[in-house]
Image (cartoon, rainbow, N blue to C red; front, side, top):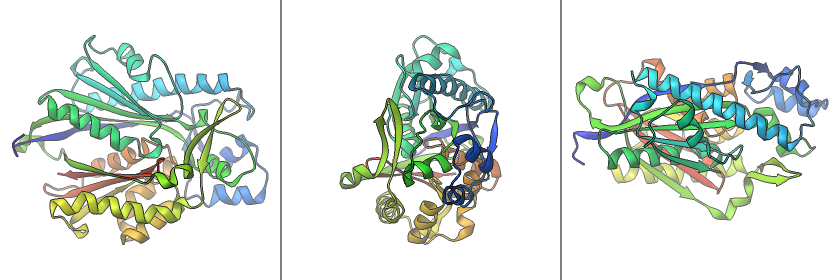
Length: 350
């Protein structure tokens, strides 16, 4: 593909459940009473979270079937809303989408969510579809990469990429630190991005191009983060070592993204870090040498929405896009950690 054509991000949109909860309300819903757990909730850097549940009917001992129904209903609604808003922002209709890709890790559906969405919106009967399962908090990056692959292979056609999670359908109550932390920070939400390989003329305005991706996979720490099946439910695995492992693997990933392109870190204007949690974000920023003002967008998303797993980094991206601050030529880097243990990165240029 010649330099006049790039995979361009045409639009981005996010969606959350209508009910918003303070950390105090979330603590009461979960039924925790320990002062130690209360401190974890209150020191998380989070003020609000959104859950796909009705507090009037909620009980902390829900069955696996009830949790599955929450995922099915919530994921379809949130993904549909994010997709609709994303297409509207680009001035397009569902029938204008040529490829629909969905990333999720907090539930399983067959037919998969992309197939259900294609029929629900509705899209053309020949729309290509795909699902990326189990990539956790890093899921948005391989999702964007697969969507960019489609756009690059089919110039002029459009790929809609949606990351959606209903973490409230994957909670588990016990007295281990990792489940307490998971219940203190995780939330529900969806984000959609529309991509196309198009001529980057002045008419494209401030739409950024996706210049490339890079991944670093370290299977020696595969047991440190993810989900396990217990009593028919998904139970989070979130080892305390993650905050110490975060910096080195993100550092390697960032070098792999920037060095082949002759870029230095001080040339990156927008740092779009997945806010997996306050301590992980702090550790990553220290290791990468980022100043506090470079974390503003990530901190804001964590404060207002919590950690929604895969869509969260796209919430940060959306904040950057809505800020009006990017100028032509600016670079941005998306960074996220996920189970595997993996670091994922993507490079943008406006």
